[in-house]
Length: 135
Image 1 (cartoon, rainbow, N blue to C red):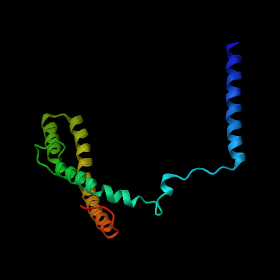
Image 2: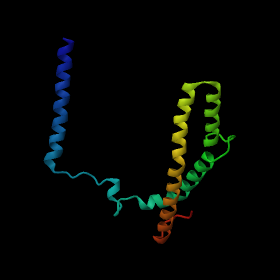
Image 3: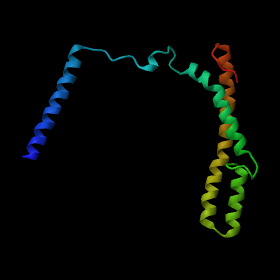
Image 4: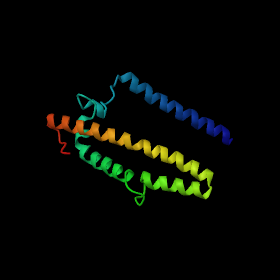
């Protein structure tokens, strides 16, 4: 009895959905334009120009932290010190884990530096286009 009611309810729901979809297709309605259709270029230039100063601050802060001394949390130097401590203590698994983490952290520095250079070019372009980018 319970299974039969479940089947009947499921069939009714599917029929209702198909009826609504069929009606929408039959009326020939067009979908509403998406948010990206509003911009003629569609590349988000105006919003990127608006966010450029905040992005630059965030990149500068991250690079400052990564390039800090051994006292700065999140710095490459501090992680190098932790790797050396793990090696001296004979904790091979910890040393391996931290070494891989160190390799990744070191690879972040040139990536962030490149992003900073690219962002400077974007900010210069924004100024020529009269968008707001004062970095």
